[in-house]
Image (cartoon, rainbow, N blue to C red; front, side, top):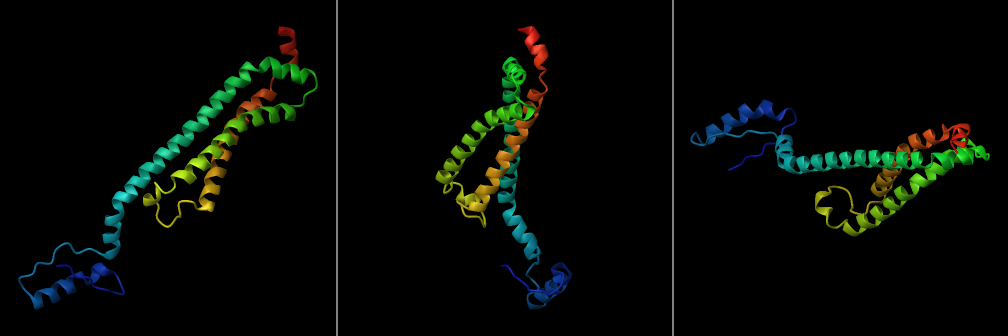
Length: 177
């Protein structure tokens, strides 16, 4: 048998009074597992909270790995194109032109990936709807915030290699030719 008691103050402060009232009614009934409703709700949601924490941790790890991967691939691409970039700068390309070229080249696959991910998330939204609480599987604000986060991380991962591309010395590149 369970008993629920509503209080206006701290629920655990009235637990002894409730236990003595139960003993007055039936001295044979043991009073065990006295817990507040907040603790009961928290305990019942603990498995879902744990699953969502793991999901968020893996999503964060995936985001970091993605940023490192984009940075690495773009750095490698910039190193392979050093001669081309140096020649472009020798022919009059400004630092902002080179910066823009590298950022645009780096952002194309990122934007394509966000678009494909958006379509996949719309298609698979119903599958993960059991994990969502208080959020619709096709919530536009959530989609916009996630897309903004991914594009921002991708942009930050492309800026460092793009900046390094602007540091190419055209004179040195032309001498190597």
